[in-house]
Image (cartoon, rainbow, N blue to C red):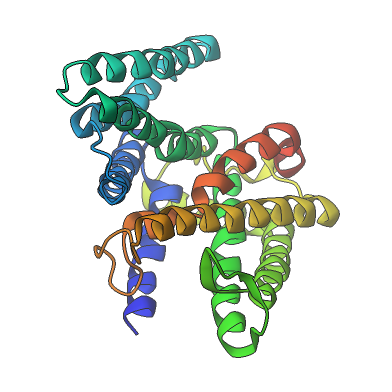
Amino acid sequence: MKRILTAAILIPLVLLAVLRAPLWLFLLITVIVALTAVMEYLAITDSYGVEPFRLLTYIFTAALFVVYYYAQSYVGGALLAGVLLLFLCAPFLLMTAAMGREDLKSALPGAAMSYLALPYIGLPLLLMAMLRESARGWVFVLFTFFAVWMGDTAAMYVGKSMGRHKLAPRISPGKTVEGAIASLVFSVAVCCLFAHYVPEIASGLGKMHLISDGQESLLFDTPAYARAPMWLAALLAAVINVAAQVGDLIESAFKRGAGVKDSGTILPGHGGILDRIDALLLALPVAFLLFAVFGAKFVSA
């Protein structure tokens, strides 16, 4: 019941943020999620006997979003240069800080685990913000969410009721092959429906936006939407869903190695923030690349 109640509260808030929040607010919400997930990630690293550089990790994670906010209005090269510079400078700054530790044997592992938080947590969530700000990006973000969320729901219920064959018993004993297949099938079905009705959804949201704002909607202007081919929607949903399932297993392996069941307790019935976004952390980069190549099929007139 706690799991259902938490989802019933969070999902509408997430959808509202994707569809209506201005960039600064969306980035603020995203960076709070990112920092909370990083905090949980760093707490898990303690169970490996590694002492990370917490403050620097938080600063670098937040800096990704600050760089994007101030560079996104310039040409793409400035944004890319800023992000790359941050990724290049971060390890050297972490290793410089590591030299100040008395126990040098633990300094490098601590710096390495701290740096891993950037590509593992910070960058995927930054890509979500970048995807949302692209042309008709709300379609891409919701498509990705549906591929992950609906698949996760199907895997949980089918796995519990019909699961007989363990998917990865050493990493996550609760996951089953039947659940994984159900996740893939249900994800593809829902995403195909969403892709087919995108023009109607955009039209309805555009009318609501016009009524509430009293001005022309730039987010939901209907002439810019097309029905993506079903084969393409199915293919993208399948690839994103598989990436999500692998991302889920990655976090499970990380927790299993640390002897930890949940990354936190902030979400009743769901564990921690990292437990909720673990599948997205691989699904988002994959989706970003896929929509960079095939996104025009969803937004052409």
